[in-house]
Length: 109
Image: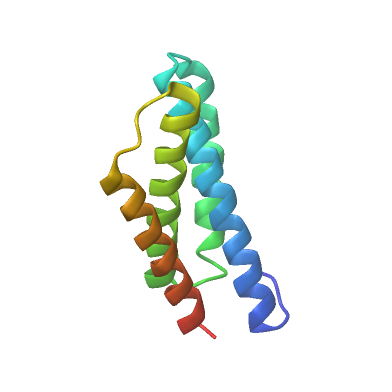
């Protein structure tokens, strides 16, 4: 277990959550691209990053951050990699997610 200041633990937790979200999104891209054998190991690595993040940050804030970021990353992956249209409601949702993340992180200070 890592020692140190609470700020360091939160920073490591957020880094691990971001890593988990990134790996989960890459796994999703692999699955959509029919590269399932590549997607599974990436999902496992994402799950490991998620599990380690929970040792560093609170579950209630971590799961919200993970879910919100995963939503944004998947919407953007669909738009950029698969040319899926981005609706007005999705754009508005991204703005609301960014506001939610800001409030979540601001409230933890």
